[in-house]
Length: 401
Image 1 (cartoon, rainbow, N blue to C red):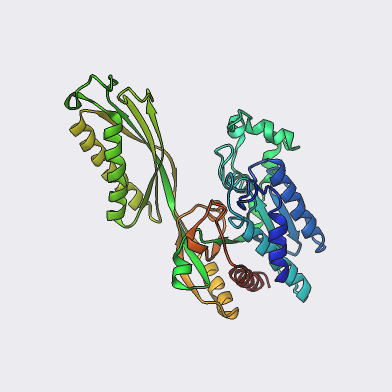
Image 2: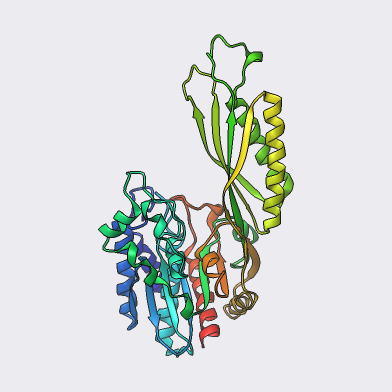
């Protein structure tokens, strides 16, 4: 396992942003493709087949009879992201293959290591693109999505030597028996408890909501305070109550992530505000309940401020309960490795959420210092990384041996 840290350091030379330690490996970008091809070389050095499929996923194959146990995660990042999110899961999978190959282990079913393209969705707004192609979703309609520079997804794929039209050939889920993913927790629970690893029970679902608040523009100097219909004042009240309502609920997490104000001039009373709300919970009923509560809160504030307001759901991702047998296998592997463990939910989405709707899926978390993620300060200690990889390796041996 000593090579795990070396490999992680080598990997993070691809897309290194500068002195702050941040990494930028966006979908279909040269740094991500270079990192993917480096991974292919490392796997081939173990005597295994590996290549990039039509979706840009790295697929490495340790051949045997039957359907495959897939071990995976992703190498792409958010802009100026951390060094461990996704990457540690892939490198831990590589370390597991290396250790099992070196020990003379003979799998009784195929073992695949997969690094999925564009889990983050940071460039084109196409999260989990690679895993969605892997399970056979039709993604042709996403080709016209553009990044911040106006580049279309289809053109970015073409420039990298891939074709949107060939994407369907990336489907491989029919040959998969189950899926395992190691990931950093991206939260503070394991570190605060002093627990070595977390066995994930559920992945939270999410609803993307859009609120539009409409008032009336007016002159900032001549309109009396009691005669205003200020959309931003109403929206500000809504934002404060959204956060408080989530805290009071206890089962959901709600985040106002973007806000757009128009006309957007310093001397004009805001006439329109649009804001987005990310709502997450491990039970879909909790998301529905919270949405109903938000609708009432927003309507009450709009009425009190003399405004109009609308609340729309723009996207929904259902929660997923992970496979009980794989949870037990991970717990057994943790015991064998002498690692303390606990059961935890995941508030973040992962590729396991896509594969887990088709085959049994399990996830293993390792601690994140301070719970920081999507940030150059993201950190998991070498001891925690190696321990997680050891648990993953034992789980693979249990499930494929």
